[in-house]
Amino acid sequence: ETGVTQTPRHLVMGMTNKKSLKCEQHLGHNAMYWYKQSAKKPLELMFVYNFKEQTENNSVPSRFSPECPNSSHLFLHLHTLQPEDSALYLCASSHAGTEVMSGNTIYFGEGSWLTVV
Amino acid sequence: KQEVTQIPAALSVPEGENLVLNCSFTDSAIYNLQWFRQDPGKGLTSLLLIQSSQREQTSGRLNASLDKSSGRSTLYIAASQPGDSATYLCAVRQNSGGSNYKLTFGKGTLLTVNP
Image (cartoon, rainbow over all chains, first blue to last red; front, side, top):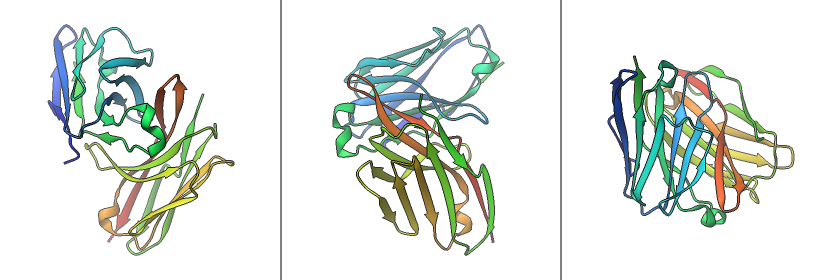
């Protein structure tokens, strides 16, 4: 248990479906992240939220829509995905970037396995 | 653009052996470097974090070193055990503009420790 909880753990969706991934952290952090992990590729940063504000969008297609209602919750809304979007989606949290000099460790959830058919 | 390379991509060793995993990065302007462990189908667990001003960090049988100027880090695992089998990921943290900081990951080293 890392303090970062992701649901669902597994999701199979059709290309015309709309679904959402949810992430919740109980660590008192104020920065949250979405990463994508595909086979044989490094983890790719998708989005960063600091104090509920999106501070980074790493050129992610609009079919992925993040939402951060508060510092403890992060969603990734999915619609009209492609088969190549099948991957492990990891949520993470840390203290905000301005506290980086304290050596803030980043904590990851267990991930949501997404399969697009 | 920062690039992180991990060598070897896979490693298989007998139990009890000491081993070294390597990580290199192209841009030395980093704030810290972090080693993670990932078990199959699971998220990442942080093992060690080394600040840019530090040379090494130790936790139990793990020792990580950092040579920032040459863009290299090593993770040393002593007396390896089958339970150490996992993918080990290296990541560097740097400023991506303003107050934004980001981690750039390597592809990982898949370690198998055979009983």
